[in-house]
Length: 106
Image 1 (cartoon, rainbow, N blue to C red):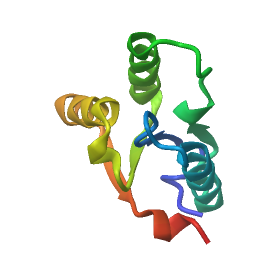
Image 2: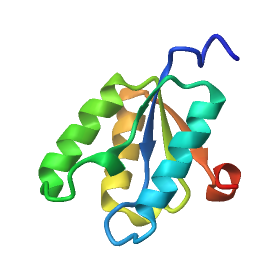
Image 3: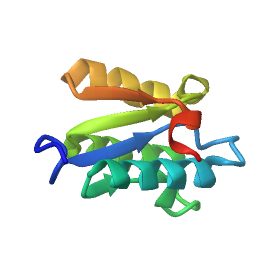
């Protein structure tokens, strides 16, 4: 296990709104990142569905602030929230990686 990953925190970003498969995709990404050695994985798909988008994005940006790396699931470009998260990561210099669904779902 890489010492850089051991103990590191990952955040999963991707399309939630309008995506019927988001829980399955985010859960698969979480399992994949855990197998890679990430100990703390922040998964916004586990937030209560009842919260409004403004509250959700504020929570997500706070989680991004605490993450070492933000992983964007393929298709994130179709999400206004994920686009905002990506722009925020670029603005603050957060490490960003892109995950293809076929990479972690097997």
